[in-house]
Amino acid sequence: MSALRDAVSGSGLVKVLSVVGARPQFVKAAPVSRALRRDHTEILVHTGQHYDDAMSAAFFRDLQIPEPDINLEVGSGSHAGMTANILRSLEPVILDHEPDGVLIYGDTNSTLAAAVVTCKIAYPGGDRPWLVHVEAGLRSGNPRMPEERNRIVADHLSDVLLAPTAAAMRHLEREGLGQRATLVGDVMVDSHAWASQRAPDHLPVAARGLDQYILLTMHRAENVDDPDRFRPILEGLAIDLPVIFPVHPRTRVVLEKNLHGLPANVVAIDPVGYLEMVALEAGAYAIATDSGGVQKEAYLAGVPCITLRSETEWVETTEAGWNRVVDADPRAVTRALADPTFMDRAKPRPALYGDGHAAARIVTALEAMPERSRASVTA
Image (cartoon, rainbow, N blue to C red; front, side):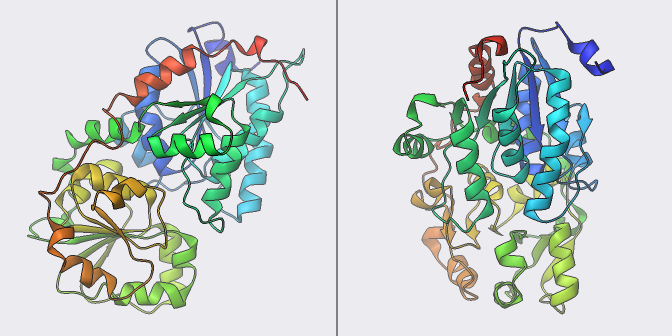
């Protein structure tokens, strides 16, 4: 038995092993971790899927949560290779610490691997940990997206599904998973509210003094790995406003290998921490992104969002008129910025994602789970 297991064994009412691996998961886990650790035991496992300082360590500092108890350090690689490495590394961690349950977030390779490991693992005597999926029920309708496959598998393997929206609940009910699902709201609302109070002093230098700027983020493989798609998107950003572009590490590699330069108005900066990102979002005239999390944060910040994809999981933002899905159309950004209805910040912005107390509801749901000794494996 490890020293960490010795330290946490027997303390707290519920012993939870939380698995994160990418920056959106750090953001989601932060308020849950703070709420969970008040009365219970949490073992935080970082798979190492995002591993450089700006994509990982800086987020833990910004979010003011403890460093992970365990880092699997899987690094980058193919989807299959990364998932296999997490599977191989996570199994002995769960067996060593024997948590009551495992908590997973979102739709990354870390989510998929943790779901598969947890649902197949058995402790001595045949008992198993329960599996709870936060941000369950999201569907883009695009089966080509690795994230879509990951989230579907995770949902169908989980014992309890904690959904962020009514639309997510409908998806789960349609797939026969309604009995396992609970609507708790979106935990990113909790994180965003917490960060918005602290972000104003963290605006990156590149954006200071600008009256208006567009914030750009791009990292999805279907966009950045295809030069014939990536190039027209970038060309469409050659506009009369500065564009601040925090460049994801994998995006920077693609830019250096396959594309030659950015439009003159696009200012590339290093990846930023969470408080810096929230400050950039709040100060932007508009946001252009292929990130699901940034779409949602744009809505929470009251900033029009242009989604550089062919679909979105966050359909509520488009229905409310705050998000426009434009695919790779090079003229779409200019058209969106010229549309006074789309750019009107006075239009209604209902509380689509909850009241900012999702973390407390998640902890309540975990407290209601059976002890893992009563969750026996039924092969």
